[in-house]
Length: 210
Image (cartoon, rainbow, N blue to C red; front, side):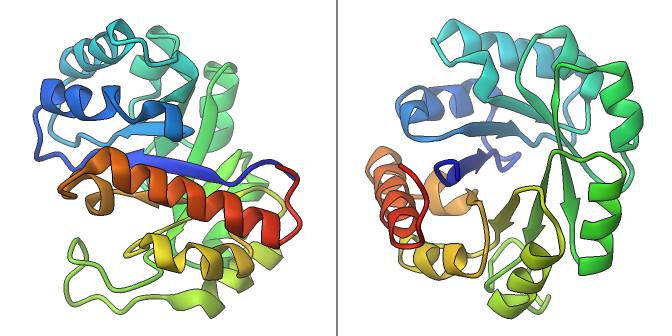
């Protein structure tokens, strides 16, 4: 099995140059960097990607939410699709070089998105998180059910700290996605290394070839 993945997701609060400053020092420790910028135009996203590339971040690590056209035109690794996005099959047919992820919130959605051609799933939120106030966390049992019902990687998101990584992997996740846990940390690079170490240790404990 592959090494568990660590996805870092932008919060839409930092400017794109600020986010680029942040990830330029920690990208060696993550597998995917998501530009989740709902208010940015295609031109702004393009400029943000070019900034990341200019800082030596490999294009294969960069993902854009929703805008498959910008992702493909800039030659980056993938696109994260939401419920309102172009379908996975249509996206892969039009932009065959992209790794396509889908955000899902139930077993039914997960199974459907796999059938429609998604390469991986982003599922959550697993634990309570400030980004989803008032919404009940889905928990580890629900994560395990999703992971058991699909064959593609499931990336868990929502309130996951380094100390929860082992339990998340044990439930069947192929990795985790983090936003505030890294972006809001006093020392983002140090915290990212803690997440990475927890993923490596958890992967080794659960028989993942490192």
